[in-house]
Image 1 (cartoon, one colour):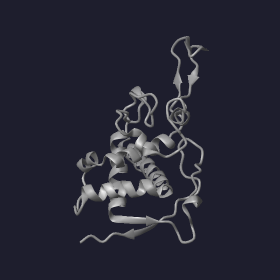
Image 2 (cartoon, one colour):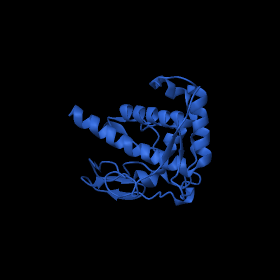
Image 3 (cartoon, rainbow, N blue to C red):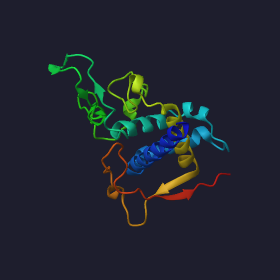
Length: 207
């Protein structure tokens, strides 16, 4: 069981990283700002540790915005109504299966201004987090069926992203422009990229 949990966490974290880098390379302003923050905070450290994450406010906003624009699991595990209930004017009989559409919640224009745009700054100065207490933002679900790997997954994503932005500059393959980056996802239980992301790393030399 532990191996399955660990393996699932690593695989989904890798897919999240692909999307984070996709949106960063598609938004040069955001990439430049996130990379500048990482390099200013980390400077010449050889070892990057989990405590460093808390000092990188903009980087955390970038990850949150990636989860908002493209939640890896667009539909939560179905819930079953334990009794007859009326919600939002709709009658829901007992035993009805209810699917929570996270993708639609995260792009609700009544909650999110310009929901199709990738704007990490929308998370500035607010208390929205991943713990399922803010129902406008539920990338890991909520309640007793919330993803059990949230702690490990978020640490993996942030630490990997810090290393990628600190140690490398990134560019697109020759002849490819920002507008050519594909943002389409495949459909299924999770949402991997339909077209694999191709980036060229340029090692940064630190004195």
